[in-house]
Length: 149
Image (cartoon, rainbow, N blue to C red; front, side, top):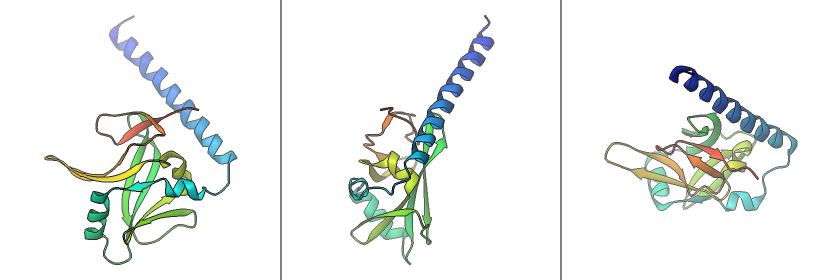
């Protein structure tokens, strides 16, 4: 088998595994239509640097939205945006006058995690750290695989 054939075969196997994991998690989520427990929301922490940055950029009733979507190099990825309108299935985490909205589908993947703002020489931005639901992640921290029960 040539190197190219090997790489193609391995990529196909990885894509199938990621697809099965995403499909399984999606089915589990669809079967459990209950609203997120208050404990799930309370277990999501906001770091001091996250709060400081949100106070700087969220002036007029805007908030940070954190979502988990399929994709990225590890199967799931974190998405961050500043918004002004809450969705009907949003759960809000508040601390020290700032708010972070998380849709009910993403709560399952963020329970126990910390939302942080990190500054480095080459970049700065929001990130999720100490996520007990994440098994592995990519080197930049933007994507992760989910721990299977």
